[in-house]
Length: 186
Image (tube, rainbow, N blue to C red):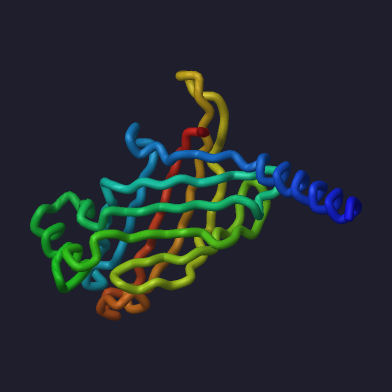
């Protein structure tokens, strides 16, 4: 009985030590140090480039055991901005994002493959009423002390999504998404 208890206590301590090495960060979108941008073809003649102004999220980063790293992000779909008011209105309408029915876009990671500086973040993306498993290529931009006494860590991620996979018209084609996040360690 004592041997079993000691084994359970040892395993618990090891797991707590492993979990303790992950550092938690809040994405700094308040200071405009995080961006979610997208690029999609327009009639196969050019591109539309835009971004989302309102989103929040957090991530955990474990340099020693990167597989313990994770991320969550929620985007307010109505914050889409392409620098053109009429196009924004059209893209937010029923023909495209339908933000009245689908007000948010969310991502929750499920696993990470790779090293401490780059890899692939796997997870579920919920967009336009559809949830699909996706893989985001990520790499660390940098980390260190900031001038205000905090500690920051930054990552860049890229993914190409097929509009048809998320219930949008298939003729829209691929949408390239880039995420640049700077987190403040908590």
